[in-house]
Length: 204
Image (tube, rainbow, N blue to C red):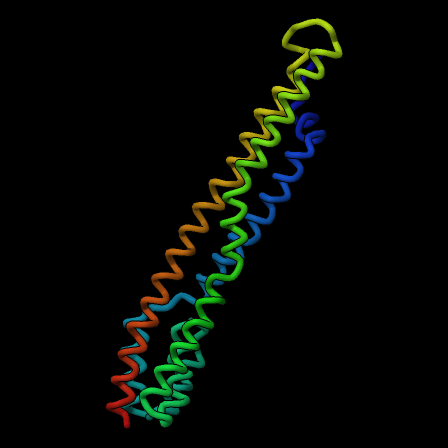
């Protein structure tokens, strides 16, 4: 009996599930990578340029400057500039609310990556159990021993174990990386918000 790798993969329901999980993982990793890359900004340079813009053209010029950026930091600062006449307390609350909204956008789909990273090894383990059961079933049906009898089941067990790890490892790495990026961006927003409030106090 000749063992075919692709035939084993094709006939394994568990591997098909893991293949679907891998496509979802790749899709959301790519989507989040594009989003974080598109919204990347240098906070120090942004605040420096914003300060100069407000000094030269006032709050309206600062709002227009923020509108040219798609970064979460720019969105939070823009809301503060648009409402700075309401007073410090209102501006603080509005900027904090805007920061929470931006955090939700940053964390979008991360729970999916985290979930896939956690469950993929268990799906692979399930495939391992199914493969071992298949191997013993084939052995019982054949009534005789030998590697060729149990090879298909053992191959399925090993392939699904490896596939589960292949899906889980990139998902966990991406999840942790993006989560760390979210934390960094939120810290930048918090620090920048305090600087902007000082700038607004000077501008007024």
